[in-house]
Length: 472
Image (cartoon, rainbow, N blue to C red):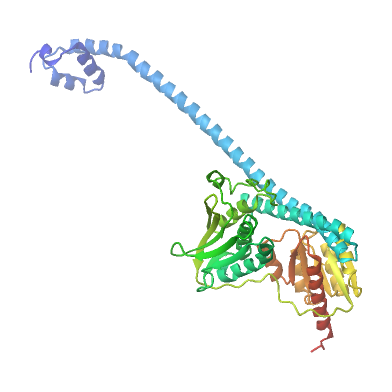
């Protein structure tokens, strides 16, 4: 096999071999590599090699301990970060819940006084006031309605941001919706000398999957802007097209001054009105941001194309559907008839609201008004007195108004009494639940006095007709 010098090139190699050969097979390993090597010398060399290797072993152990300590420190930091993240998530959830509670509270607390302000102003306007007094009333009503519009938009945006927006998707007939919006905007367009037109709408019926009320709100905002920001003698056009298979686009084009490229990035930013304030055009800067939020939540898209000096085109796209849908905000009401005597029970704990209703119904001499400030008391009074109509607020101190409605509709003594729900927070979902529980109609505060009186007259007439029918 050769000599030691021919087999081993260095003492370091021998040392590594001896360190590795610490098991009971050391003699066999050495005999294979170094035949004839003295075992005594081998033992001495092994002992020396092992002695030399000990410091390295100690170093490896120290490194292992250091790594273990680092690992423990990192694991502690991870646990700390996980705990901090959990606390942050809890805080975010609490803030989200608090924001929702604040939203609900503000919705009620802002609408309720506005109901009194606008309601009593309408009452004064309906009375025989002088021209000077009427001129004083008009800014009160105009400002109250502007404030109400601002409250509505702020609350809608807050609902979108907190994922509390309730939608009721259904197949919506585009032709019908566009016709309604154009009819609503014709007087304003005529006043500003702007022509309103449609293109592609009168063709085959097309339906989109959307919340009808919200979609109408968005389209009305776009057409209103096309009229307001137009020029005298200009034109606003609503166009229906299908850019892609399964999608429907509604475009609203105007012949106004258009938008600068720098304005396009700001057009959907809340409260950013661009130059509208300097142009003397009323608004809040919330209409377009709200429109974007609503369309996005309905699974659609919204955008704008504009060239300075050539007008702007705002567009929305939604998924097309082939199934027709129906929509109804109220139950059918009977034709208006002369109102005789009747009893109206209002269930509401807000004194300003009850005072307003009493003043409004004083226009009907044959109507007696009863008031219950709590829901349970209202149910008892309804059973005992069987009023002609019940006016029901939903935010009551003891039980929710929907519970009152359920109790009235399931009791044979009160099930046929018409109930008009008046609420500061009318969502599509709440409206659907109220109608399903037997409400005749759902009104949102602040109420429009002439509309309210018509509804009460119709309900009283229906109640009187029912009471005059012979018992079968």
